[in-house]
Length: 131
Image (cartoon, rainbow, N blue to C red; front, side, top):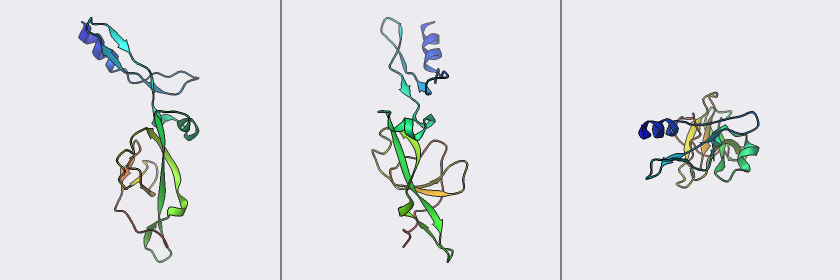
């Protein structure tokens, strides 16, 4: 029976209310069989960029757009870097350049941090920088 409750609580992903941001909770079962809910963790991808900047467990992800030049060649416009997402802190611990697009756009972005935002898909190889 204790295993059932542990699984039930462990499967609870989030809770929300009208005044709070979405949060995740973690649970664990003690040696006596009690289920303990640990400190709430903010679900970073659901936050606005302003909210993300105030959360210790989150980090803002920046990227540069891949653009098409007048001659039809593509390049990365490093002068137009923008904030594109909020992810969990530490996702950039192993920086790897990724080229990806959001689920609602065909625009590819060069993400230097190694963080692939939730729902994004890789899209091509790293282009040269625009001149």
